[in-house]
Length: 589
Image (cartoon, rainbow, N blue to C red; front, side, top):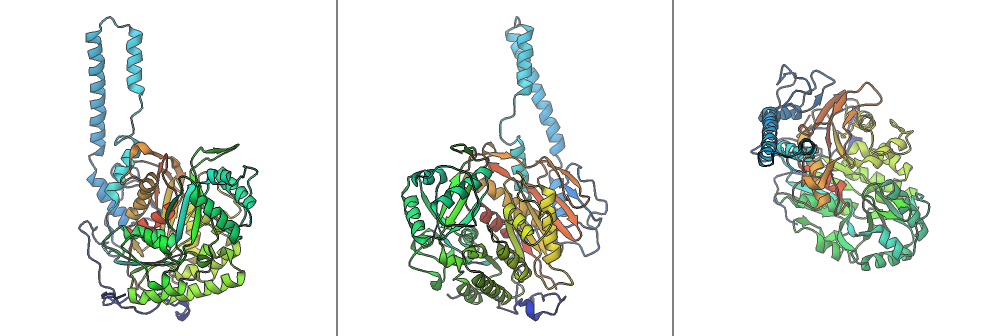
């Protein structure tokens, strides 16, 4: 394809060529011209060591974004931006008092009218009326916690000063067949028995046991089905069931599709793209001819709703179980096509996913492909951030290899959920690795400890040749963005945008509908379980909390969970894409 871009495919990030302990070079200004500035861009940061706000206020003062600072000098652009937004809403307290007075006045007026019209009304009836008026719950809307939180997000979410123009995404893509998991298993003649996890599915019985295991937990999972013919039979039955729907699938394709919704972005997608997938893709997604193939790869997405029952089984949360017999994505066949397309496309952001698909491959092939992944990433110019999106895995050796075989140091950013985070810690002997699984909502302090450990042990530092500076963590009821200070801007807006899209996409709405979502995050939490952390109380009016720990900043926000989700597949990919869209990578030396 012909691309008229001023960018030049400059020096690579090849870590092996960097002396230990050296920093990677920042791209020359001629190589990376400034992106168009936003009309809503925030002011530039003050010089290092200066204080934009010499008298920091306590974290619970009205009009100030939540902050728990572990260092007196750890204020970031987002914290200051939060103050500016808070000051803009400085009338919130008197307005709230005015509304309270107005409500009381209307209440008194209503009771007065009743007394005037019905002077003989018994006192007990009046007391009952008064109590019912006082105790009636506020209907969902702008005044509800959900409505106030959504409005606060809207005020905080602004575009960064420097924006992405070209995004390259690879390498897993497929067609998702989405349907009711219970209905498919019933159609297959299966009955719910004892749940049991299987790292690889070899039969229908394995499928039933694994589905029961994860539906009982309300947890998402993805597995490889080893028997090609058996899978094809199941896939054909699934496609023909009433209610089955076909969607764009695969982390790379879903992330590319989300980016393509922004018309100012040019998106390159490399992956196994068959006729059906090509038909489903947004017109703004460019697919190189080498990525096109005659047959689609199909993934079966078995969904279940919160409270859905199958025999004695009852799902605590809405979620999905994914399985496939996907050899093309499993071998990452499009990796070389992806890398060879980058020089011509010249992206300023690269997103890589699909490593989890290698679980069905031999150990030797896994090792070989991981080395080739690292080599490929190392050839990408140093000024181009690389985001790695992880997904459900069960192979500890593969995860350990991803962490230790230079994959983590080669990428700039990670995206993952609670299962992947805990599994990563277990595989690499990190914090809280003795925990077998999360008990309900993942503890914020434990999650924070693991994120801190990843960035401290495998992230960028003066003594380590690593590019990793950012992790976007998402779970059902809250999100956290952790970044090494000085490398990323606009993360307050990024974490809020990721949480907002989780609610809108699950409910299939353009904006948050307060009547269709609920605030389920823990009302308060500790920021660490391995050291003396700070205690934070959730306030819907100030929806992003920020704290700092040894040069690492954490941004936390609750999620407004859709009560009756339309579709759960691809939420993690949409969250990561939206978070990246609102993020700004800072050039550095």
